[in-house]
Amino acid sequence: MFQNDAVVHENVLPELLKDGTLELRQDLLGRDYKGKSSKGIAKKTSALIKKLQAALSKFLEPAEQVLYVARVQRRASGVIQYTMGWYIYYASATVIVLTNRRLLHLRVKSNNQWDRGVRTCSWSEIESAEVKGWLTRVLKLRFKNGKEYHYWRISRADALNIAKILPLVLKTHEGMPHKGNSLVSLCPECKHELVPGTACCSGCGLSFKSKKTMYWLSLVPSAAYIYTRNWFLAFLDLIGQSYAYLLLAIAVYTFLGVALGWKNPNGKPISMNDGIAVLAGGVLVFVLDLIITIHHNNYFIEDFIPTDRKASPTESLKTFAAGGTIG
Image (cartoon, rainbow, N blue to C red; front, side):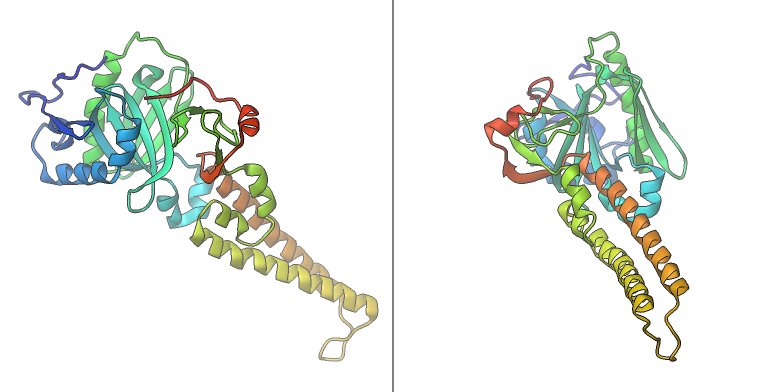
């Protein structure tokens, strides 16, 4: 295990600061990758820790030291990034916390407040980790079970510091027992491990947003995005899907007019071809909107969005969570 007094920067002694229950390695949090004191890095990391102090106090174990924190973006497919546009920077906002024992992944809002999403993995579960890229820096994690996970949009200063720390913590965890896990999601209430796709935590009964409900809501303009609390995308979906329904309504009106022999304002009979063209356009817009809506909201729900409801004991027993509690 990475020792509490392990030296990372040459000629810089370990400096441990205790902030309440938190143990912070100031010799890493306030310096650049060369070990030089940096006011910019110190200010940034201090602000993140202050915003996330409640979450860190809850999830960090006794004597677990914070080595570094960085604001990043969690993994998102190219399709999601392209179709979501600039909003992806809000939707995938994450702060990763490197400790002497593990990596902690906290989903955050645009103001860096914790959004009640948390994942974790022990360093012993990671086979390799590297930071790559020039204009866009990416942290690539490869786990011993063969899975991979990427974080992107990492600042240059953070990328250099992370690249300096990671090899050291991974080396000290070589040969240690592992469970064959990758990043594991935890319940934000009781810290119980969550199985992907579960509807509620079997530890405390906390319920999470479900894909089944989202699928039905995706047929109603903006409803699925409101369900996952993404208001800007809900507004766009309201426009897109409403337009699709409008085209479909016009197509139905056109077919009805053809059947009843109605005439257009020019006095000519309504054409069946016009109805077919409008119908095709309406179906195309509707299908594209539906596919994008489901794809986006699957991404949100897979990251476990808690509700304000707790399931009954009977409901909780229907789900299975692995491994007990963390912390």
